[in-house]
Length: 368
View 1 (cartoon, rainbow, N blue to C red):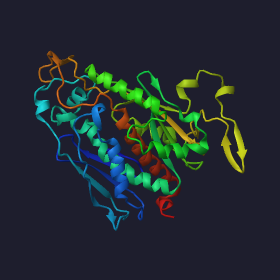
View 2: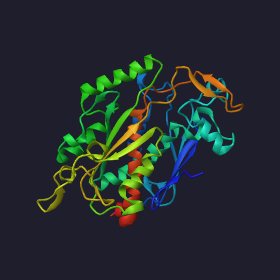
View 3: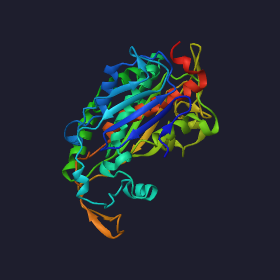
View 4: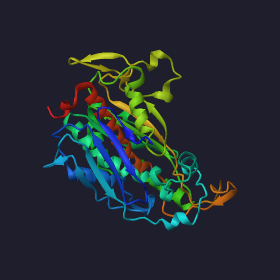
């Protein structure tokens, strides 16, 4: 079972939704990185359910760092974070027996693990595991911020409602906008659109249904020259880790699908010299040329599917007998996960960017 990502920085996740703990191990962190408990808690709070637009399962996420930190600094040895599960209702999953939940990994997990998997709450496939990723990602994000690299996401589209795009914001103002977004529980640039999006989530919940959308992420401050051509390109590394986030069904860099049918003369990003710094007049390529950063902000859009757990009755099969069956899912579920997934996307991007920078410059890059 492959639960580890990265080369210079290896991130390993473990645990199940209804098990005693979930957790993450970061192996390859530079020694001397500040571990800020307040920042970790802040990032975890952005993933935590909040109000009627989220699940009623709320975990305190009282994490424990059990290795790799001394006097609030990383030691350079493996850093392990444990997060207890304290608010589980496993009986909700006993009621539906072994009927596969549409859109979930119940059937594919059985095919791979021959029925020995922990299916309660989705087990190891649950979005609950992302809390550990966020905790680990916060440490990487702190290290990146000290190097002037900032990461932030917002809900670009939900249902038929579209927010302001990062492309509409001047590059000099982008860091400020990211800082504002990273303090918002519901990360939308245009507050009017925020209210409409939240109402769309409530409408879906009222119909016993769910809704999805598109996240837009910006990574600023990366130096030019990071990444590899071909198999370890910046796009391929980030896509790898982004597609590991539950619910992500599409990834686009820069203008991507939006403009690829145009002519090259309108898609190409013209290079310019501004006060001795090489920039591009547009950013249709999303900060990457030939798999390598060009110094412009990396802009990514991620498609986030509607939450598969809905309260409408659906058609399915019984995994024990393979007989056709109906299922009415019980338990506590989100009518939308996109507003909680945004901090998970930030976190995996931070882990991937840290890994690429350590491969390019060495781990001491983060302490010098």
